[in-house]
Image 1 (tube, rainbow, N blue to C red):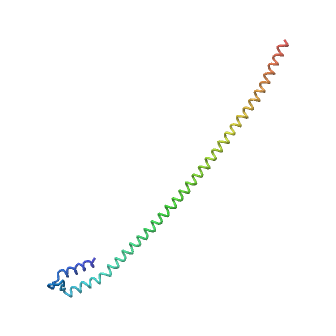
Image 2: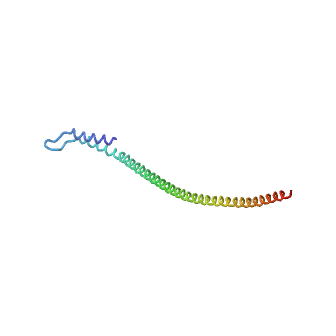
Image 3: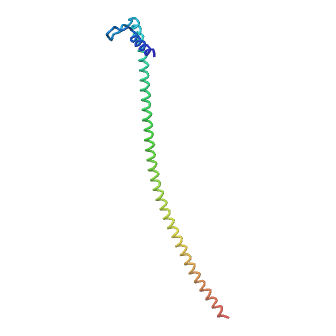
Amino acid sequence: MDLLNALNELEELIENSGKIPFTKKVMVEEDHLLDLLDRIRTTMPEEIRQAKWIIQEREKVLNDSQKEAMRIMDDAQKQLERKADDSEVVRQAKIAAEEIIAKAEGIAREIRDGARGYADDILVNLQESLGKISGQIEQGRSELKTMK
């Protein structure tokens, strides 16, 4: 920060220089003033280069930050879309699963009802057959009793 020091020295030179009475003018030692101006001129390009470099770095950081922010926003948007798609897929899958379960329960009910009907038919036939056999047994016993 040699530039600031030189400017401070210049200000001090002006403040400490002799004043012309009844005016706002001062008398400054010419050599000292020219020496400070030379120092300012030689120091200023370095300070300007540093300032430009700082501005460039700031711009680079801002650009990088902006790109990163855009990338994060894009990623978030894609993730949101994937979740929306996933939730839609899950919703559709649940609906399909509920339909399959309902259909399977209906088929199982029909199979149970059919099995009960078939078993009842078999039992009715068996009962009829047993009734006939029982009648034949009674008839055979009656005939045996009459033969004595």
